[in-house]
Length: 243
Ligand code: BJW
Ligand code: ZN
Image (tube, rainbow, N blue to C red; front, side, top):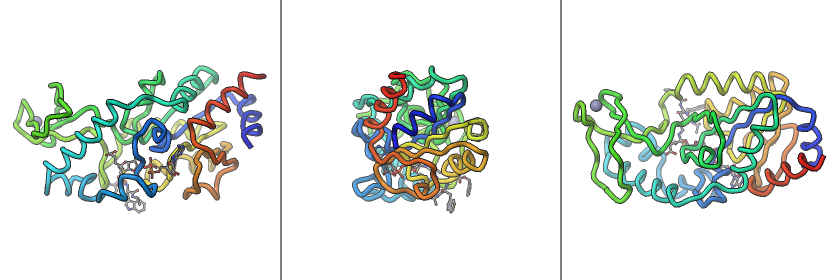
């Protein structure tokens, strides 16, 4: 299977990728919907929605501080590095991620499209201004906006919230342009991101999934590499370079 994918990639000029939490799993960052994932232990509506934040901002803030600590101590893995390498190999390349951890950036990827925001930054729920003071991950107290005194929240996209329009437009453009589209480490259950690989295939792309498990997309893809991304992606790079 991986040999066939390498063969297709050798001929391809335009490649796009969508990644999800599985890409960071081997960096020690928990996914959401796996049996040991975050949603097995925590309630998504309590922690990842505006309603949840309004009813218990302290709880939500502490949960984000806890995750920030894990992410700050994590390192990009071989999958992130392989993706960073890929962007130099094609005439057109686009990377969109649902991840908020910025590990793609830290691995050297440029122009990363962040569909669900990022966990590093924060903004005010009242005036929208970004909070520029440094956040100490050990500090449990809720910061307040320096301009208007409003509540500060993490710059991620919660359930029921619109994705950043520019990011979504760029990601849709990429899924339209790509000859080869990869869906890597995502359950492909959360919309609108989950529509991107489907849109790519509808527009003629060869659709490839890299994921050790079955997903909502597995029955629909052209090729499935059922391996962890930190294993499959370096293998693929090696095959491509061997030519
Ligand atoms: C490996 C691996 C390894 C393991 N290697 N792989 C009904 C139908 C359609 C849509 C909706 C609906 N009801 C509600 C909606 C909308 C909702 C939605 O899609 N819900 C579905 C769950 C049904 N979407 C939204 O609300 C979005 N906004 C929106 O639609 O706006 C328009 C609107 C406005 C107002 C009203 C209504 C609509 C926003 C979605 C925001 C998602 N936010 C989160 C939290 C972000 C912040 C944070 O991190 O704290 O984003 S939820 C969470 O899920 C996170 C992720 O980015 C996202 C996707 O998860 P992902 O990355 O796929 O992870 P997992 O865990 O699901 O999968 C991991 C995969 O990795 C697995 O497959 C493993 O097998 C694999 N894996 N190890 C490779 N080593
Ligand atoms: Zn404010």
